[in-house]
Image (cartoon, rainbow, N blue to C red; front, side, top):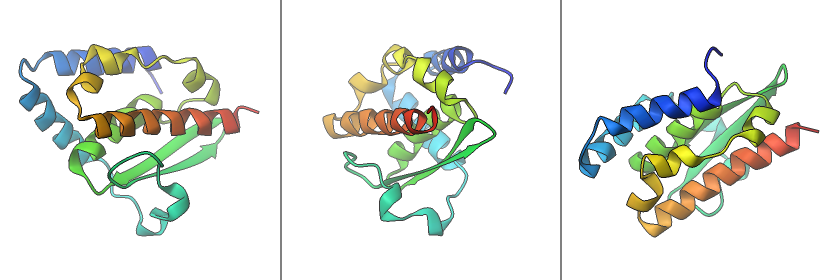
Length: 139
């Protein structure tokens, strides 16, 4: 992993700042969701579902060599784009890096304020789940 969490977050902020209109940003999110690798159907189990999301979002966390690796999927394309952003930032990081990171980039790109209340709640649930998984493996 060459770049830090902060650098990856800044790349995302820069990418989103290239779009003036939120419809274009939604389109970009949809493209990100389409680029998310397909999750193995066996991993789409009840225990992998993120609670608090209106749409179904599965997150599988694997801990290898001191780092967390995430795979995810969703039945809603914008939600899939949102989880792909989070995976881009946190995949392959140590639990300590994840727990030390802030999520200010979410507000910098205007994501939370431009999502419906239910999607914004889902975003918070996704971030909480990643942090909980990091806490679980940081011991």
